[in-house]
Image (cartoon, rainbow, N blue to C red):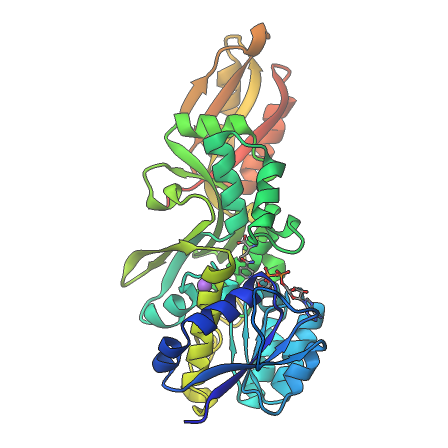
Length: 434
Ligand SMILES: NC(=O)C1=CN([C@@H]2O[C@H](COP(=O)(O)OP(=O)(O)OC[C@H]3O[C@@H](n4cnc5c(N)ncnc54)[C@H](O)[C@@H]3O)[C@@H](O)[C@H]2O)C=CC1
Ligand SMILES: N[C@@H](CC=O)C(=O)O
Ligand code: NA
């Protein structure tokens, strides 16, 4: 049987992992695909000693791979959005199917690339782009096809979850743990993408488009990272029976669609609150199936390669199938929601954890509660700590009811303006995920 010929561009963490997995498990993988799968051409700036390229054509110019008439599938694992966009466009123009792990590329340029692929009758597969080895794209696009997806919430950045876990469990320094995540191959080329939530926003946009049948809209995601999380908030969250996780949340509401990435306090008893280290998890609520949870390694060479190779198998199986018979890129052959109303963060409703320093005098708490009540937000739980080092003020920790973000921000301004309140008010959004 004529083998399916793969051209692999990029021999870094994921590229070398893909080469290793395909070589090691070649016969089982080909048996699953129903056709032999061979890497016949590699595009890489330099050789990688971990990959034995004997018998494989090697080009220093990756565009040679995209134009190679022998190749059926181009696998883009170089990262970034400039050269990668050109490479994928060139591959499509040359009639190649594409497999990529590049969430930045899909989130920012997916709409145009999918249209180009559709016009050429080829597919772009991107399972590795979200939550590494977890088959979440397949689950949303195929496994949950019967459902209206109501919401999804995920820990979708392995580096960030690894950092938060090491800091909480071992009291390690943020920058030390980030260095370790880089050494382990988890982090993006620019690790601020991991730490400031950009990578999670890329992934959330992809998940939301698959869930709600809408075009990719990266510029509409509200994004906050993990760099501002204070160790005392991690401890107070624990005291209150919660954990702080960096979540991507997409929710369909009557008012519109929420798309937000930020640190979130969630009840410690939830399974997702106990997802630690580089592991990712995505909780998806469908109207028919109810809540479902997907768990696995979110980053790293072989877990990510697992998803890349699964895509190669999927594409290899459907090489001769027409576009209309393949699973659509975003799961819908005609988008269910072509012009969605994406809510601004001001319009989002959630509960809050607030921490502030206030003078320990009668009436102060009442003033704070009144300001919140004017914003239609009530205090559900309160902890008053002992003064720190004999200071005149005490830390106050409040858990509030759900309220509109805009109202909460106005209330925080008023609380900060009280003479009895010293410094700023820290706020963390709280979700029950029930
Ligand atoms: N590392 C991980 O755990 C995961 C990474 N990804 C994505 O996979 C992609 C690759 O990531 P990594 O393997 O971690 O990056 P990496 O930096 O380890 O590998 C990228 C490789 O591409 C090569 N490259 C870049 N531009 C090139 C060019 N113009 N010509 C030839 N070679 C070029 C680099 O020299 C490097 O060897 C990125 O899009 C990343 O976001 C996705 C999921 C997990
Ligand atoms: N840098 C990313 C890699 C996988 O997508 C992460 O840490 O999750
Ligand atoms: Na995945």
